Image 1 (cartoon, rainbow, N blue to C red):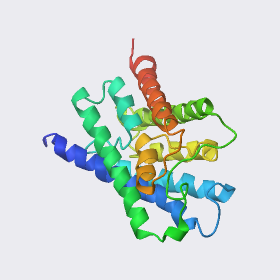
Image 2: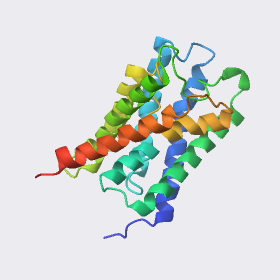
Image 3: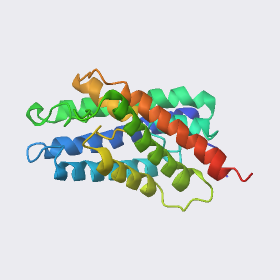
Image 4: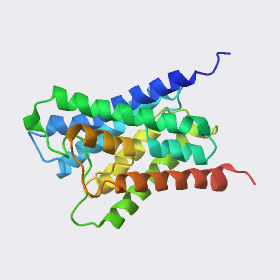
Length: 231
């Protein structure tokens, strides 16, 4: 039986996996920017499938090493459910933020600036139809679905062995539900990495921190005490 991966290997996997996910997800918006609006119906479909497929690949590639969290909200959800040691939580979050920021920097450096704006470089934006509280609530609900899928398709020992496919499909569904309202970030790293790289700092930035963290924590608690616990 092989030894568990060292923390350094887990952190490297979290950084690289998050980099791959954000590069594909945010890069899809840049790639279609000259053809259509990222908030059009077709643009939302592209974003949904690119983010879903990108995350499915990244999670599948890293789950055997780090668990494939790739998201501070998922890390918190795993932590409250006693699936991630307390000593790993902050290092995981730091490396996820680093990987996402490097992906944003890579996109800004490699793609023509004429293709991008704040949304197209991967930074989520809040629809004018919503106030901040509504945006926070939507992000929390979407992240609840995502972390619930993480538990039900990867973490639970009874789960089907489908790699990151179930998680990717949850992202596709979430983006289709609210991609045009909040950007459906569901992931503080996915939101803040491109914001930092693109120099985009909206006044409502906190909804992409508070909403996903609350949703992820609630999903972890619900799965642990309502579904997983046999008593």
